[in-house]
Image 1 (spheres, rainbow over the protein chains, first blue to last red):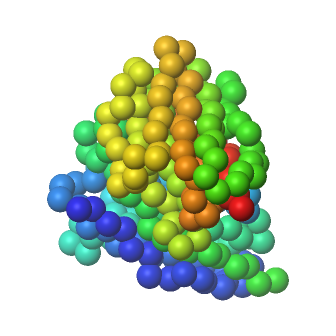
Image 2 (tube, helix red, strand yellow):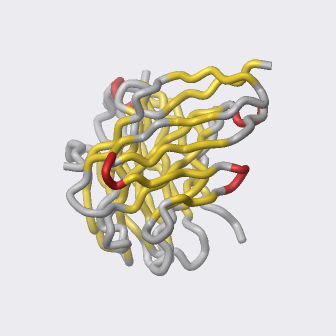
Image 3 (tube, chains in turn yellow, orange):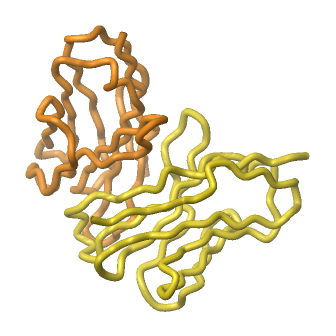
Length: 116
Length: 112
């Protein structure tokens, strides 16, 4: 069965500092990989996704993520965080079929706190 | 283009009652998925509908059910509510050509 591990429950970063959120996955085949962000009381917004090709993917709000097959990782990065980046971040894995017959499997999330 | 709309946003129900939540997908999207989000279990997949047919179901008891209408709108129903059903229920829609799931703002269900 597929699984997603986000080892950091909370991360505190100073505004302007760089950020890396970790994500490891377990999946039987090459999966689709996603990062979502959730602000309090809100739904999920897609930051970026990886399907194939270039292992470094760019997303919205200045985020990027790197897929490393050998490490089964898909870490999210941002060179300089802003106070508005404070939120919950979820890594997710989905089926390669693309048909969406299986649902997304999410990690437990990383709560990002920004210090002024 | 309107996003995914979930109604109601908030619900308070009593144990033993049943509840119906509604989700209107993005226009043209035929796939609708439902997720339960709780502090303890995180985000868990409930089920997915496509063209009025349930394509897949997560590991939830039969008290959780859903359906999809010909206009792609979907409802999920929870019968005999338990305290543990208190959660944020999220709906996501997806087009056939794009694997990106667009989420609604969710329905916050509180069971007392």
